[in-house]
Length: 153
Image: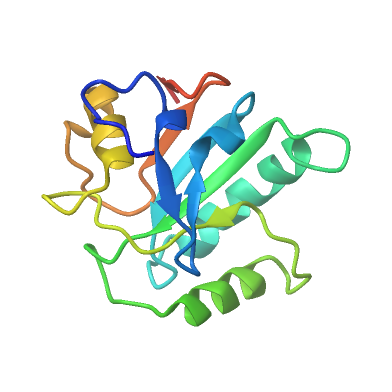
């Protein structure tokens, strides 16, 4: 399902592997706003960013409305490597241990270089002003509209 980044019209033309290695077509998020975040739980900003995103997610993604999806992509180009179990445990601890997820966690990616997935190549090409075509840290946020097109955040 991977689209060529230079020809893609939205994030819905891509798929991404989840933590178990299953391919998830991003078209499943059609009709919702998506916030795409590269992260490391060992990054000093992790708790602060999660504290900001948690109330936002719970307000716009709950039993009565599903207007927002947060897609988390572990990235270790800026810090130390973590296992999927460490990542899940850290998220659970940061959300008060209630086990309520605040988005979906995908498999580790590289956001820069030749190994960057098509999704990130697409996002960087559409929002070059956001990061100059290069992601320089974790917690670079890409916001898409309900049509999967990056917008100013």
